[in-house]
Amino acid sequence: MQERENFHSLKRETPYGEWSPGIHYAQFQNLQPCSFPERRLYDFELLYVRQGKLTTKMNGTRHVLTSGQLIFLSPGVYHQNSVATSPTKLLGIHFDFFGESRILREEDMVVNEEEVIPGKFAVEAVAAPFLPLSEDPVYSPPPECIHAMEQLVQEFTMRPPGYELVCRGLMLGILTSLLRTQSSRRLAKASVHGERIRALIEEIEAAPAQGWTNRSMAALMNLHEDHFSKLFRQIAGMPPGEYLRSIRHREARKLLRETDWTIETVGERVGYPDIHYFSRTFSSQEGISPRAYRKLSRIL
Image (cartoon, rainbow, N blue to C red; front, side, top):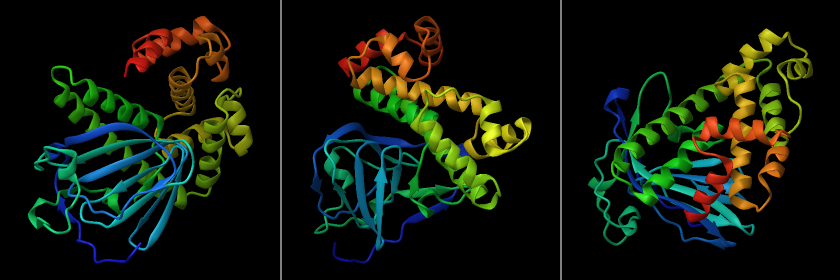
């Protein structure tokens, strides 16, 4: 990718109450191996890897994202995306922080280098105590953030009455979750036990069906159970048990969408061998039964 001068992203110190994001695009994407042309955007994009691998070259750095990671792309910054594995499944959301961008078509989001419109670049909202999200662009969003992104895509795709309000609320939740992830990441680097807990979190995500308990996890960390729970909440943003349930729910949703396994098999694979308990737990978090969720996901 040829190095070119980037537009310096605009930032504005703005209280949270004045954030009012506008959504321009939200879609699931299934891609085969390819390399896209270098480009710049007028708005912001969250690009989340649901499956596979994505490489993004930006600001002289090559970012390699695998399943469960997200990259925050800023307006005016040259970048190039490449897909190396088949299939790679992505989730993309284009937005601005203040609803000020006039985006009528997908083409309006990408800068035409022959007719650049300087005043069209979106502005990033910044509020203490957080740093700009663009400061460190790669994130591993927590389960509730992934869930909100998937809900946003569904709302934006189906566009029921009032979907704009729902999308705005979901986007505010997504941005908040990413900002908290940023803080947790900084805390993890500063904490003696932070990196070990992050490693444990990766183990939980890789094997959610394992018999994790607060006691067993605390024993792995060689910590008192109460102290472990407190540290875990600081890093993950929620207690260990709640985090485990969210990971199992996320995995269940994925398996219901992408496999033809029976409901009982899906429950076993995520750590709920009792199909009735699995159905109750899933319904309490999703609002619909596993069977209904599978049917709805096939429609979308």
